[in-house]
Length: 125
Image 1 (tube, rainbow, N blue to C red):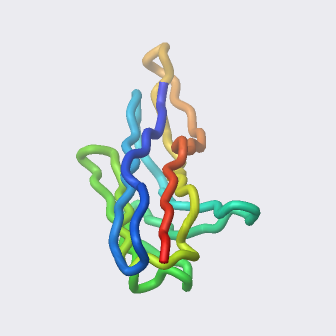
Image 2: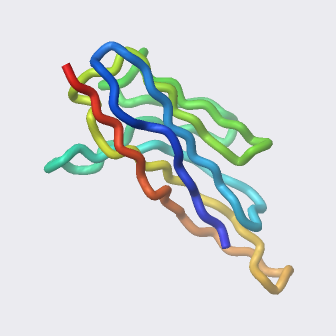
């Protein structure tokens, strides 16, 4: 069964850096567009970065120039490096991916969207 497992995050002071990672496991045939989202307490979920199949990344204006999303195809993983963190970056960060998986019959395949479990990033002044 396909799943996305996140790691990283934590507590840092403003101006410092952190990273979060997201590894996909299971019977994966192909991973389509991947993305990072975040949700701050009391706020709606916000798109942080989208990574296309070619590896190009597009960012929200609020993180442009500070965050970098990279893809590790060999590991079916994506990373989010966050530099010069600000208190307003405090959120739970979630990875998301559209994945084609081979089913247990070994013949059929299915496309589904998956979410990581979320990692908390807290930035204090």
